[in-house]
Length: 239
Image (tube, rainbow, N blue to C red; front, side, top):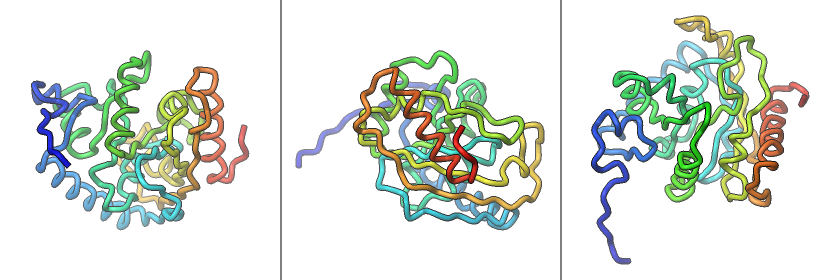
């Protein structure tokens, strides 16, 4: 095998631009930071929220996308911390750029600790979606995505948006439905500090959409199937 030296995807960008870039690449310092952060979060979730996890045996090999209900800022932290240690540097929560990447401080937190990648919630650029899909497949990554689009203000799960369909339709990327119970009671959107409420994470069997054509009409169908997968784990009937 012949080695080729290639510049990093984010070569030439300033630090501020790199932190908020879809092309951001990891360095040794970032890797060490992710490991330390993961251990801290796992300790916190175990001690203060008595987190229990079932269904990890359903996880496929990367690339895949984790989806779940979304009612709290604890959601992405819990899903990322629950994944096997071997996947730490492959896990990227997909975060709203207008919330997590608005300043240097928030961008540093999202990039260096959460390892999040930014995405516009409104008017997502096709080029950004194509970049996310290419990195997911080529680098065998794991994305954490909340197809509701925003945190629930009531604790009830909203209908999933078609963006998940646009990302995975016609690819070999599997989607793993998850349901997180207790996060809304622990840290709903209107609270600044969490209550010490027990959390339960249930991981379901992966869904495949390789046979679904990557057309706009199919995205809603994929979103509906993903939503049904999450609702089944919650015990709620599909709507």
